[in-house]
Amino acid sequence: MANVTFKNIPDDLYEQLKQAANAHHRSVNSELIHCLEKTYKPTRCSAAELASKAADLRSQVKVARLDSDEINAARSQGRE
Image (cartoon, rainbow, N blue to C red; front, top):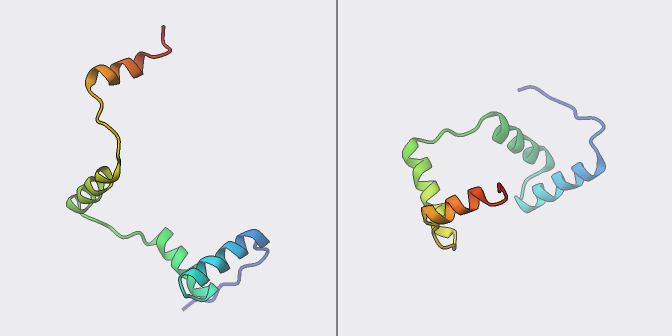
């Protein structure tokens, strides 16, 4: 495995990294590796999984559905 040294990390960024590591019960090094993996090794999901996640998110939104007249009125608002 490769070794990497990070230099000149801004204090506020390092504090955020330490807080995240503490919250996840990891070392700063492990938290940094986790962040890098999340960024550079994203997990793939199927279309069905994505649709399921979208449906879950939609079910959490507590707003009334808009009909087409309301949508068209909002679109044209301010265009007169």
